[in-house]
Length: 210
Ligand code: SF4
Image 1 (cartoon, rainbow, N blue to C red):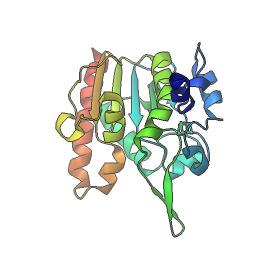
Image 2 (cartoon, rainbow, N blue to C red):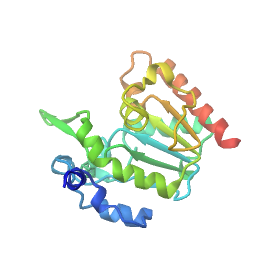
Image 3 (cartoon, rainbow, N blue to C red):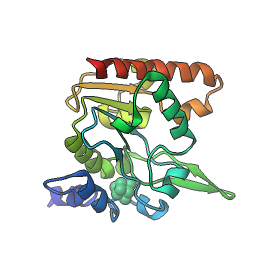
């Protein structure tokens, strides 16, 4: 009984026993496993090559992603694209997703301000991410920002200390964490932060070439 109520609080019952990306995407449209379906306009599922060698996982969709239904297409997504290009990684050959698939925000005047998802929301959404990992089976998994890194690598993980270095994990042969591109947009020294981000992505690119 306890096990069932645990499942009821997560997206697990919606995940097909034989998942494929189209099946998962379709099922996730109707997910109500946590309260974020009420605030987000739509589920923003991952996108990219079904057998991508590299998967990037961010925190959650932002305002533009919420409206378009696509991950990493807003200002942070554009910065991410530029950094990928500088690092020599082809985004069309990658898979890009988020730890949480609905936009969490609070109203500030006419603006919708990002709010960090809490642990129960992250846990509720985790079956989607696990299913994406099981289908794509990336050789290199890259966590973008503390929320994704701590969701996948444990709450003790510190991006500030461990960024850009491979981390032992059963999730993929190589797992690396770096900052979220939105943190660069907020940084005082954007140029330096952007360069450090590109350096971390170059490490990802080196593992992809091996
Ligand atoms: S955030 Fe995830 S678990 Fe919550 S309703 Fe959306 S898809 Fe479902």
